Amino acid sequence: METVHTSDDEKIIRDTQDHWIVVMRPLGVLFTGWAIFLTLFFSADYFGAVSGNARLIVHGIGFVALVIAHHFFFMLIIAWIASTLIITGKRLIEIRFLPFVEDDITHIDIRKINELDKKKHGLLSNILNYGDIEIKLENTAEKIIFRHIPRPSEFVNVIEQIKLKGSA
Image 1 (cartoon, one colour):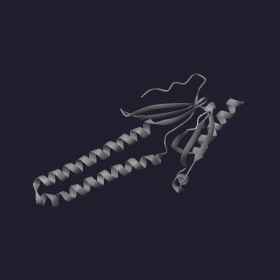
Image 2: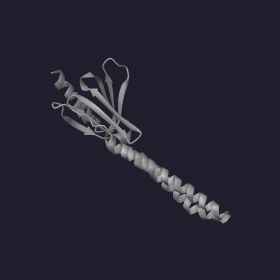
Image 3: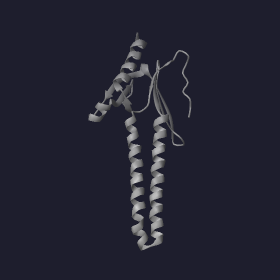
């Protein structure tokens, strides 16, 4: 994982990870893997009555499902832990890291942010206070979207205050 270097006059003001709600998907994968494993494990006796080899095949399929579920669970948890969004006095830095798969660092100059929108859709995102941040830069039509940001209103306020200080 590459290190992000800041200059002496550039201080980290805030850093955040995706909201913990994104961990629910890996947990769903893990529980599904366990459900498949347990279902196949306990139903293997039925297949064992037909053939002894059938029981071993069913146990093997269940074990493979469990290993795959654990792999995806830990892979997504590591990605969640290692990825972060950092606000400094000059830049917005997004780090997305997953060993051997993804190692992306995005730098956005805060002075070049033209529009900044916060979006919270749905009951769950309003109750748990997470949402998406949409950023439109100067001279570009595309939007950069950061998803599942905890306390998006505070995040937007920090960036807007930095912009105001920079323009003053």
